[in-house]
Image (cartoon, rainbow, N blue to C red):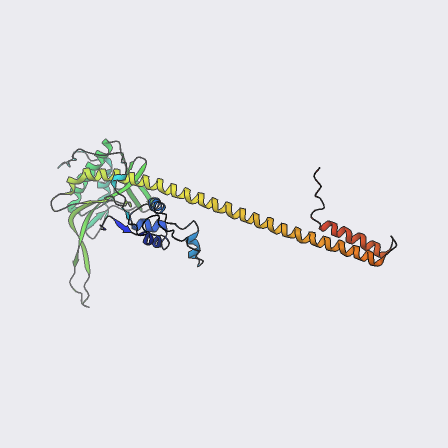
Length: 356
């Protein structure tokens, strides 16, 4: 039975999907790594397209598909493809203690204090404040009413992370954009703190058209701004638990995100190496085929020249037999000498010496 976390396919169904969609795109649909999907195909003897297949398809030259071989057992084989989850990750940091957000803070973390100053000259959109893009502020977008609470949450998170030796920073993307990140196990994980909004329809204008405004609803959310497969990437206020009660889970989520990113990079590097090895092997085969073709063409030319040489020599001998005796200084003698030399030059065996 198929659940929301499981994709059940037969060999034929997976074979059809693999040959209809590039592996990397198909893997994302399953929240799976392309390397993991290849392993599933290999396990069940399902052939996959080789390097260059999709380029040929793109240019309207679809190559021949590798047929699906018969199954060793039952042809209808159910394949469970599970999304990637925290069970197969190895985070470097797991916070077990409860993280408490204080009601008042005497001294803010330097990055929080810096952000407080910058938000004073920031701009408001849909009721939420954001620092100018050309300034280095934490990635925060909340209403004025929620700012004190947001500052306390961010201050607590940053201090807890630094207590565990985790680097927190702000990195500039371009002249008008930055992002907030933590660095765990050599990987940067981007995150932000926002306030959710709700849509409010406005009164119809004089033409009868109704517009909609988006206004803050007082609920805060922490987001990890990276693709994380099946891992959690959002923590928000709920009916029974405030965001402040979920900070330990969020910090651990950052660590899991770093582990996911690291693993994904490693798998992509391995996949790239496999493609590179396949490309080199294809190139080796292509060069070998070209070399073999050139050798064959050269052999055919040699055979043709050898045959020409024999025919010319036979022609010379026939001419001599028909002419009979001739003057060594005659035009005929000159022709015999030239034709014989020409035939000998054509002969590919002229430089081949008998083995002693």
